[in-house]
Amino acid sequence: MNQKSIVVFASGDLGAKLLHYVVKSGYKVKAVLTNKHSTAIIDFTKKIKLPIFIGNPNSDTGIGFIKNFNSEIMLSVNYIFLVKTNIFGSFDFPINIHGSLLPKYRGRTPHIWAIINNEKETGITSHFINEGCDEGDIIFQKTVPIGVFDTGASILVKFERLYPTIIDKTLHLVDSGKLHKTKQNHSVATFFGKRVPEDGEINWNWQKEQIYNWVRALAYPYPGAFSTINNIKFIIDQIEFDQMGFNYTMKNGLILSLEPFLIKTPNGVIKIVKYREGNTNELKIGDILRSKLC
Image (cartoon, rainbow, N blue to C red; front, side, top):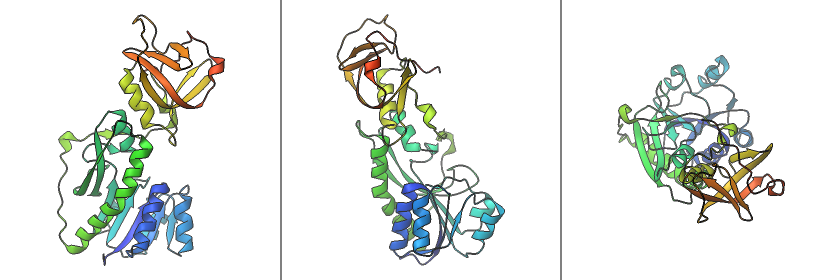
């Protein structure tokens, strides 16, 4: 069991689940920092009377809060803020758990970007925090395969099952004194930024395979891939490839059929299997779905 004390920095549902795990596993959690929208974390800390700071940790009040706890380990899990040197530098072991195989896919929502980019695997990395974004020395990594039917949500389920093991392994290495740090190869690093719902618009000029990955990466419960026509917005959660023929001179995004819902792309026809918004009754064969301008 880890004997060093921990301050947990966490956000969101994933952060809440892992905070539950760390506390109930008997680790010495002294305090928690989160954001105002992470209500599950806030409610849990109040229930067990664990000190909590809600807001930007880089503020004077945030820094003052952290100074109240003489803890060796900073454990960051799904935390939305980038912390400054005067915060992580006050811990002997400032550690972040990141959802990619660093140095690939630094930044936000890396598992979503991995699916969009047709990767066959992703993973989880525990690493030291430094001044850069996800640039610190690696402690431990675990590979997670991406199946052809995986969505952003299903990869997150795989992550949730593995995160406790990653945390246990990392904290054991810290406590045992057997921790070995591996420097990242910055020359092969990639970085992907924050996504917002408006980024999900489909470009029907993309190859069908790219559209397929785009849709499954953003499928429910994520905001979703979408397309518009005549001020009607379709949020699409599942597509398949269809064998229907077409003429290459047809415009991409052309509706070829409504039952089933078939759309022409440059290299094949897509069947829209599931959508959660929009109404095909207001469409007709020959209509053209808008293509995002890139």
